[in-house]
Length: 371
Image (cartoon, rainbow, N blue to C red):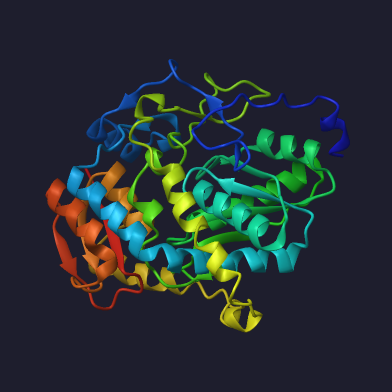
């Protein structure tokens, strides 16, 4: 069935973002001049009254010098740990798929992780795999034009989806549903396996670690993800054969650390050559228990939260709440947790209360304020 869609080809993407195209190709439409950002409170009110988050963009957070220093400090401290997690997930991807695979990152948190996996496989296995970054949106699904483009250009290869981390598993569920719908519509079966660097929610089978630790790229927004915004899907802006859209923040070129991040982690791969990889290191990779969601249900009861979307667990998601939403409070497992320095700094900067919650499954959890 899918062959008939190949006759009407999806056009090649225009260059966007600040990564080298050898690292990643964004299958995204540049919306510069077509869409402006919405202030935090207006955007939050629209979302809570039924508007969709993908139809408007938040204003990008401008980090303080102290916060940027914390990013650089964390990058230096955690580089080896991140590289080791990249190694585990990259080796699992290769073992499960073989060498004929296309890496497909979910924009935008997945993009730097996908770049690192691509670089690792090139460095260690001399495999130069294609790598694309595409959009997936809760409530709207995956960008089908992007998938069709990849299948047109790599018909014999398997697709491996990649993201940065898991929270409560919302995107995991969205991806699974999207792959089912794609099969029904196009007659082509996609593997919905999602590979992530960290899986504290225990909701995927391909991951580097299940520790809820600080991945430095989680600290920032566009400046560490190729200078693109979060993705947008509005029918008045996106044509039938076009990809989902983003803003390209060219004005932030002086502030970008996207390449610094991947270069710093990639430099660690040479050291890993000296330590042969054994799959015994991945013995805890089999079971998907969704244990994170069980703790979230307890939080919902304790704080009388009716909508699970108001709870954002894990370091990555809590950071996003502080950067893009209006939090009511932040729960942390331990105020002395060294992974939470940037969370505490952001909370202090924005006047958001922080509470110790020792029974937390994750390192921390953000709760969105109901307006």
